Length: 190
Ligand code: SF4
Image (cartoon, rainbow, N blue to C red; front, side, top):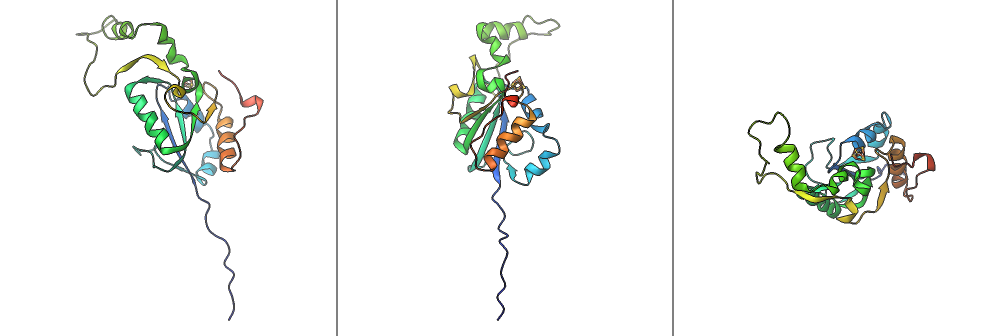
């Protein structure tokens, strides 16, 4: 009998990727999307889990990679961050906010009560001003923190935002099983 040699068609396991924005501006996600048509290529090797780019509400428990944009400014951010750390093997702090608090941490030398009063009581054009206190709302923390103050972080992708090419490089390094490394021209903090 003829033996039929089966080609090795086993598809490569896709990398499971989750992303989120804490106290961020979504600019890092926009920069991710700036990979443009390379996103199509990426989606052949990457499967999206929880992300603002889809409708998935929780991370798959076996995520490979979590990209976190934004600093930590309220109690919900802490819960999301812990969920990501529990679900993802590798966590990358993406952008200045996640890395060192970024622009949102400019409020750190102002009392949080003064911030709330300024926005909700003393702002112009307010009708029946009051500081919102519904239990549905997360509490602001006294300070804004970088994410490594709350969870262990594996890598940092700098920039405000990091360039699309930096996302591309770091993701491809990980997909190729290499230690992620950025060339000098993709490394900036503004
Ligand atoms: S690092 Fe910059 S682009 Fe990214 S979330 Fe913060 S402010 Fe936005």
